[in-house]
Image (tube, rainbow, N blue to C red; front, side, top):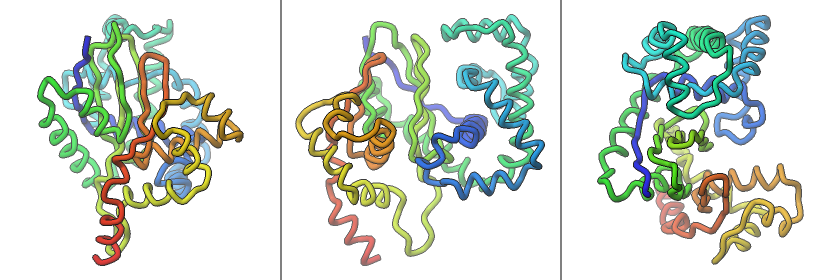
Length: 301
C-alpha cells in the first residue's frame, strides 16, 4: 500500500529544528552554518543560561514535538503553538502520543513543561530575531511543493525534495509529512512513528552574496573534490550497498564514512533507499546533469 505525502510548514517547526541543531554537537561540522553560527548563538546566552539549556536538551533528547506541531489546531507561530501546548491536559498529551504509537513516559507532562520553557527562552534569545525572509521563503517552498502533489507522485515528490532519499512503502506506513527547513542545511532528518514519518529537508531560501556560488553548486563541487568520496561513488555505480559494505570496501572508520555519505547525499549524488529499518545507497547520476553548464554560467555571471 502506498503512503501519502503532505508538505507542512509553520514557524514553530523551524524554531524546534534550530534549537535541536544547536544542542546536537555531533552535527555541527556537517551543517552549512557550522561552528561560527554556534558561537554566534552562544554569545546571546549568559553562561548559566547556556548550561541550563544544554542540561534541558539532554532530558528532552527523546521527546519529539513534531507530532504535536502537526496536530495543533491553533496558530502555529512559536507563541501560538506553545500556548496551545501548555493548555493541553495530561489526557490530551497522552492521546496525541498514543495516536503516533510513541512510547509514553510517565512524566510526559513534565517533559511538555520543560520543552515549552526551553523554546520560549530560545525564541526570546535567538529565534525571534532571525531574518524574516527565512520563514517567508520556507512557507513559499512548502506551498510550491504541495502544489505539485497529484495523488500519484508521492514517492517522486519525496525523493526530489530530499535530493535522493527514496522511501519505500511498508505494510504500516500511511502518511509522510515533509517539512522544509533552513538552519540544519544540508542535513535531512527523519522521525518514524509506525504509520507516520516526519522528514525535514533542506532549502536554500536566502540568495548567496553577489558574485558567490549557490550553496547547491558548492556542495556538488566539494563532494566531487575528495578522493574517498569519488571512490565511494565508483563503488555504488550500478548497484546498491549498505553502510557496512561501504565501510568494509573503503577501509576507513565508520564515522568518516558517515561524514562522506552526508556530503554525497547533500550534493544529490547518492540515492538513499529506505524501507523500514533497512537503508542502502546507490549512485544518483542525474545530479551531474548540466554540471559543466552550471559552472560555466556561474563563471560568466
